Image (cartoon, rainbow, N blue to C red; front, side):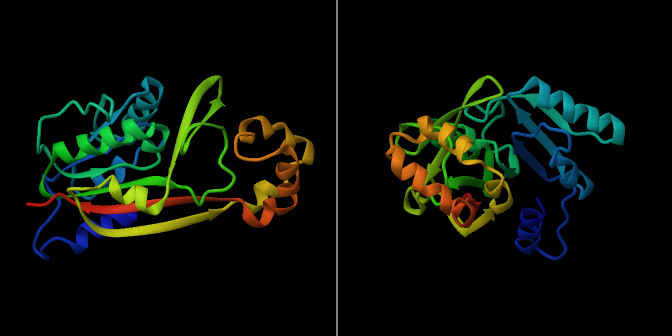
Length: 232
């Protein structure tokens, strides 16, 4: 949030303010909605989320803090707004739960609702993440059970991710790594081997067992973040 806000500030005239500028958050629900920060800086803040529960949490936050965010149920694959409605579009850790086909569709929708010259921030999971949890049903698409619901994480190589943004201007690209050493150190060998069924299409049982000793040094979550502009 702060990174994108700083990015916006560096790409506007010194005399220009955020007052009246419209920003859309794709995946805007949750206990602390990111839109609250943008609202505090004068943006007209709009957000969509597919989850009723997440929207209710965000609305409770708004009531508690007496702020006005424009929240509605909506799917980023079919954004419920007209073409070129927003000055800015923001997404973080929501699009990663889409298949690769749906990710491309969501990015196309963000492009559509963004004004010419508008700025966008979003991210995808890198294939540098290790280990990828879940069964790889399609290349780079890992399916797993999350609280009783089948969920996907899609992972991209750098070149594959860049190809998602044909037609955009890539202003900046960042790779960010979160090391998961403490969490990995707590995993027992038994628990590690219990996850083998998800990984079996990539590794033999013996190879997976051998990786247990490397888990602390290697476990990481890697994101590719993009700062984009829609050409004028």
